[in-house]
Length: 88
Image (cartoon, rainbow, N blue to C red; front, side, top):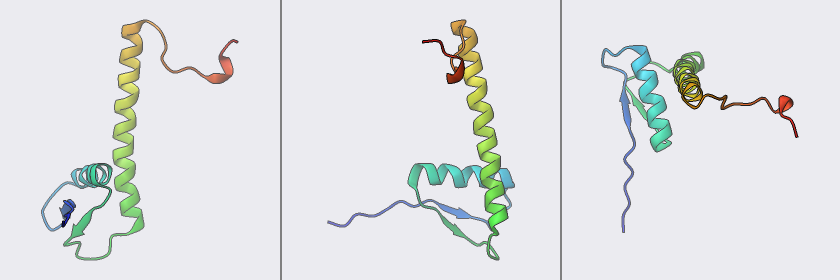
């Protein structure tokens, strides 16, 4: 039995915003674990890759914090506690 993998292909030759490429890269990495990048025109620097991940990480962090704050307001209590302030 032959098993084939469906690896996402990110084509950098298209005119796409850097943030969109960053999101595609992270989504592909999360969902599939592998990414095939084609038509780079040159090697992608470590700094550019790090920048792309930083942009997405920042977006995800802001979304998570907003969701926790909203849920906390709805429940009327804090959801994240600092362990140093807990009472036994």
